[in-house]
Length: 196
Image (tube, rainbow, N blue to C red; front, top):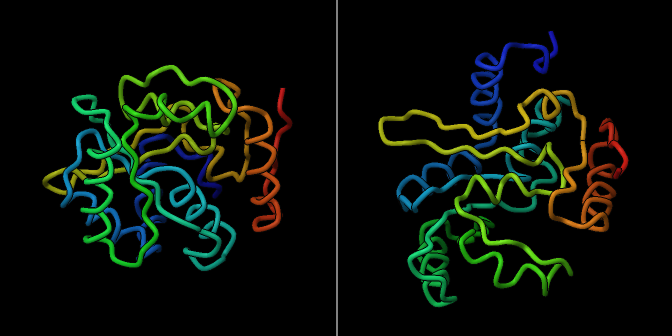
């Protein structure tokens, strides 16, 4: 059975099982839980690309370049505060590529990097909502007691079904097209829908 056709509660259970195949990701989840950053999620490529790998029979870590660890702390928007968290993460994660970002600060640098302004986010979920493709809009974390929290505003069916759908709420078309070009090379099975 295709996982994308399961009821959403069963898809969440399958997601947890699938992500468990990626030992690097599970180690990052464990470390992120120890850091206990406000509103944190492990998100983006490491999540959906692990699913694509497992669904297509590839090694779980293949093509996963890094692990995006988002958190939200509006109490201090300075680079120094974010850098202190990044350094703490570096100590915890060692050589594993973990990109830690305070999503409360994104609006300060986004336009310079991507050419369009970004309104301030009000939570980590808001940042996840703004990814260039709806397929990317998935975040996971493990809370105290081992409970998994999964944020997926567009559901999980497209992730399991290898469908990449544009999300033109913030990122420009060029970002979507650059990302999907790389993904198509790594996962030719993807159905990449055109930018509207």
